[in-house]
Image 1 (cartoon, protein in one colour):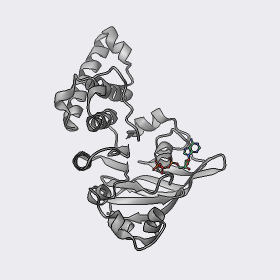
Image 2 (tube, helix red, strand yellow):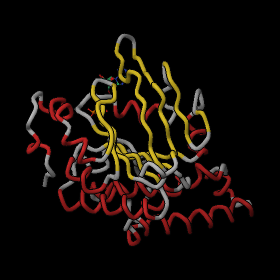
Image 3 (cartoon, helix red, strand yellow):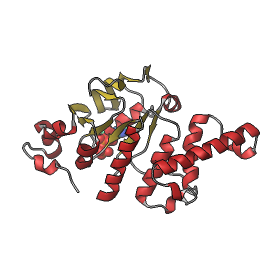
Length: 266
Ligand SMILES: Nc1ncnc2c1ncn2[C@@H]1O[C@H](COP(=O)(O)OP(=O)(O)OP(=O)(O)O)[C@@H](O)[C@H]1O
């Protein structure tokens, strides 16, 4: 694993909100072609890290390096263009749009041609539109939603909506996909299916950084992980070595020697 090239590196990254150090000097590395888990108790700073990587926030201190670029002060659209895409902790789909239209919006993020130009029917825009449509259909198939293209997204099940979000995030051809709690609110079978999908995406060449609370999924589907607590690095390595770490167990449960409670669940 250590021979695998680095895709993302955080160097002593800090983010303060007033007096709160949401992230307090975190250094960690995500290697190419891996599924990397970002875990830690509630309020540890995981979502803030995702927001820093995607440019929604800028670090108070430290630097974030991605694929040879320093992301310092770059706005979200530039970071997306470099190859970083994300989903959110809560499903964020547009109401009144079909599954296909949701994914199309992700494709147009990359193309730089507006949906309005396409609707106006200009030849180049028309061609763009057809290509984006074909690509969106492929992406829907890739996330197991081939038959749902024309269905209004809000009428789909929660698990299906999550898949649509992933397809939309793939529309901009990312190198790194950030998933913020992709299995939140899902039952065991749905969570396992998301884990399988994540593996398929990794095996097709994508790198995935995933915030996940389900330790069963982390041990089963992540190649490596970073554990945060109070905005700082608590442990990193294989999921098993992290979960077995008494400091990690203490952070989750306030006491040591309680490994059973963070065995795979479900
Ligand atoms: N915009 C903000 N303004 C002020 N404080 C914030 C802001 N965003 C996050 N925080 C604080 O930073 C800390 C880390 O929050 P964050 O949401 O990153 O944690 P988390 O690990 O993702 O938690 P959870 O697992 O509950 O989603 C918390 O104390 C939170 O209240």
